[in-house]
Every structure is written in C-alpha cells, then in structure tokens.
Amino acid sequence: MRDLSRASGMSLAGLYYYFESKERLLFLIQKHTFTTIVQRLKARLQGVNDPEQQVRILILNHLEYFLANQAAMKVLTHEAEALKNGFASEVASIKREYYRICVGLLDDLKNDRDLQFSTRIAVLSLFGMMNWIYTWHNPRVDADAEQLAGEMSDIFLRGVMTGAKGRR
Image (cartoon, rainbow, N blue to C red; front, top):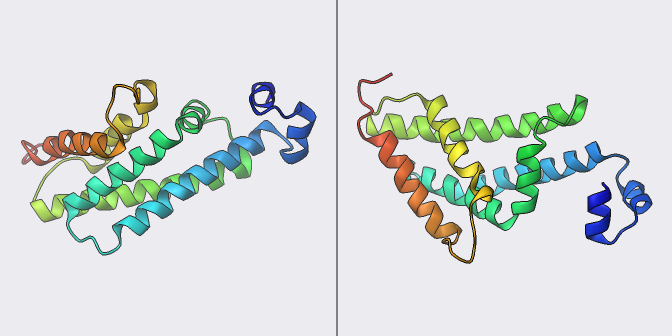
C-alpha cells in the first residue's frame, strides 16, 4: 500500500479511505481483470464457428489484455494466493469460468479435428505460455499483441494438432 501511495501521489490514509485493506484492493483488481477478460472473450467468440479460429481469438484476447495491463498482470501472477475467504471464492469462480471456456474451446477443436491430447494439460500449458509474457515482453523490440498472438497460436496449435493421435 505504501508503494501504491507513493506511485499514485495519494496519501496512505487516502488509500485506506477508499480501500479498507490491501486484500480488498487486490480483490477488486483481480475481479475486474478476470471479469473483463471473460466478457471480452465471449463477445469476440459470438458468431465464430471454426474451433481453430476460436482458439486464436482466445489467445489474442488474453495477450491484448495482458500487454495493455502489464503492471496489474504482474500483481495478479505474484499475489494469486493472497486472497482469503469470500474474496478468494468469488475470484476463483470467475477463473473457473474462464478455464471452462478454454477447455470447451479445446474440446471442440479435438472433436472437430479428431485429435487426442489431454485437454487439461493443453489448457494449462497455454496459460503458462501466455501468462508469463510480462516477464520478457519489451514493446521496443517485441511484436505487438496481434503478431504475438498469431505466432503463439501457430506454435500452440501445431503442437496440439500434430503427432497427438494415439497418445494419452
């Protein structure tokens, strides 16, 4: 809270006037982030029927938000387990919804292309690839979200769509 106070130019007392605790502030950041990502993804998926294109949309949606909100994403990644009680359960519910959407998209791809791979491992691997982008992305030398999403989509989809038949 002291770092936030310094960075925002607001007094520590002023911050605590608006947010009764660090946990409440963290909760609001997480809730806003995950709700926004889920809502944007649902809107972008409307009318898109091709499972591969849907996965590409998922990746673009995720990377656009992460790159536009790197500071918040760093906090979320490092403070994911800091929430307790009702705060934790509400955020976990939104995260589960996002995870279920991703699982559904990959299951649709598997069924459409007659593929065999562990959906859980594929989804968690994809999140691993996307969520750590804040640790290395440099906008001065690295591509923008759209180009990165295209390349990450190609890498990920080539992995799940080739050589996966018969393996479990």
